[in-house]
Image (cartoon, rainbow, N blue to C red):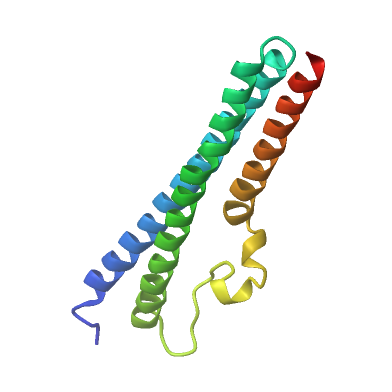
Length: 145
């Protein structure tokens, strides 16, 4: 005998999977935006390095400050995906029979070094690089004059 709630359960699972895909796409877009912005700022810095000190310093400051909201938005995406993973686990327990498992990727418990994941690591690294570049710009323009 078929469960009357099976279509509703399957629909719920489909919605959860679509939400996970959507949030994963957002995470990917945010990483792309971060690299695009950082690339444009580094290009501008390279063009202005020897020309004027003030624009080069401002570009370094913008690069440094841009890392905080980028890192924050990436961490929000990860938290949303973790919450959806809990919903996916619940849906899997409702839809699949005992001992039957859906095919899924790594779970949070499977990853040991969370700080090395790109959305955790790269905004911090870029902030350090921008801080270093700011010091270099200040030193190079201070000794050149």
